[in-house]
Length: 271
Image 1 (spheres, one colour):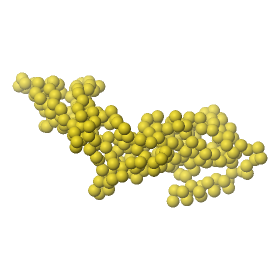
Image 2: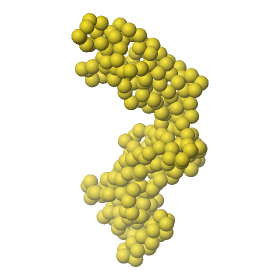
Image 3: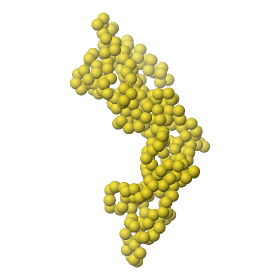
């Protein structure tokens, strides 16, 4: 249906545009710069959806772009996604200055767009359409502007019992590291299967109550089932989280945080 709509839109646009003048240059539209996902890898996990912003600068001396059909695709894999919007008009373009256009758009990526063969491959932007002089163009992002498609690791929030411990006592914190298998669905089909990610370094980080930044407390290696576990001394109240720096086709990830209240040993006081 998407392809049919696109062909119809192109046909209509072609009927509205004037005939190509004899001096027209069919390929005078030039892609100057492409920014995909703010220059960061596209990291998708096991479920839900993500928005990937795209911005391009296009040199065009005929007065503008009549249609823009933009899509993201991977090299060698099956990843493919049109940018959001109607066929032939899925980017918004503005002249800056008259012969240079900045076009913006976004692609919404969810389950069904990704597969294991695409993980770790670069993602390219392709633009097709017509300029105001009836010249048809096909533009491809420069390889230097392409970004990688990666799997987002799953990290379970730290678990440490009841959420309260006496100051100076031992605090055992656990968690789990997984990565999505984009070719296998969980029962029910609402998410991809989360496989254990064993043998990976995972850091435990702490943010003391009243402060704004996390400090790394230590690093542990995930077990065969993906679990991580360590014991620390409870010195102050605050929040804990697990952090994974990424490896191979799996992107960096940070777990949700968990608040732990540390109680002073003196009756009636807390810390």
